[in-house]
Length: 421
Length: 166
Image (tube, each protein chain N blue to C red):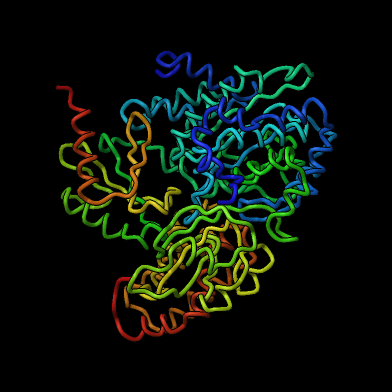
């Protein structure tokens, strides 16, 4: 069995206890950084590792850190633990099983950008996790690993949790910052981006939980080790959240570049009896629908390859759909989600998701004709490229690809009335 | 009043944020207010506004925006079933429908004894463990995964027993 890097708690019992985490080298990377490294060197190593943001956008992490404005202080690190994308449940497992590696990643990011305060923004439903995390942070302070004058240096760091209250949009980094400031969780107009104007208007790095959990091992084991995992342009391990019509749904930590076929059929145990694989959504509900033919199944899951089969890797939340499901039902589900979660700030998204939901309900109920399918597609295309943030754009991915690639399902639905998935 | 009742907690919450940014404390303070009774009263909105130097309207707008805050009394426990795409692919819609039938209420309604409100909610990041739900009550939130209708009914019964002092 290969050694897990992010889900190490599956191989090391009680890793969520600080003493166990430290027995396995925990907080050595942070100590090394604070006592013997320049903050810029930490950023450099992360940059050279090729680590890309695991929250969905895939932006190079180290590069993001270099954008921090050094003319303006204080700086903040905010960890995005607002995991809410339908089909995504990886950060929750890290927070529960391997929380100290994540917190060490937060600490390293803070040291790298010379921040003395970091916040962990958890979705409201992770209320219990936040309570435990508060105790774990207290353990770190008691052990002298967080607090003032760390390891006898003049570097000080505090980490706090902040609990959201149920809003998908707060996973968008500027909406998250607004929410943390006690306002409605609505995205900001960008630029300026958070590294120049972030939390409380100060330079801020916002990183996903899984992204930060990579950092301690990059610092302790080095860039060469890290880049030996995954592909050249998408190095490192990735947690794939596998759900939907598979025999063994769950989180699978695999190198970037693993094929869909290996994930779904080897690790996920294939499709339950009575069904055949039909479509794949590679990035949760925000995905286009990929036709699950041999070419798609043999595609490596990395940031460069998935677009070749008409998708995007995103947060690597792979939802499997089999041939017992009609695609109009999938859109009915995703559009109810997006119209509920649209924050209401910009018109194309607020109105567009509302009307798309009404049209798909009509189609799904068998009360529509083909013109409605064309109308749905047209509304989707009107939303495209016109929204303040990615939510509106995400809402149309499944719509336009579903109608284009699974036209037959919509023909059937608008010809003969039937119901159910 | 929460400032008196939870004085130490209010102070600890305010200490998490820079002193000129105390508005950030609004979300944790709303949770405190909601701890009794499961919803936030008008008086509590006014009080939170006063503590943070924002208007009660601004406080109310946040309650409307976020799904975990409530401004009306409902059941003592809220059963929040995820029936989003991934969960629905594993039978969450049928689970929710049958659970409602067993409780004799529709989604969004409360049982006649005022104990259970049933709600359909968006993704709870437990897609591999569907059907699942969370229970929101005055003590917080708890996840129940890989559920059947009978196991869910057992959960409700055991919570009902805990609620009724013997």
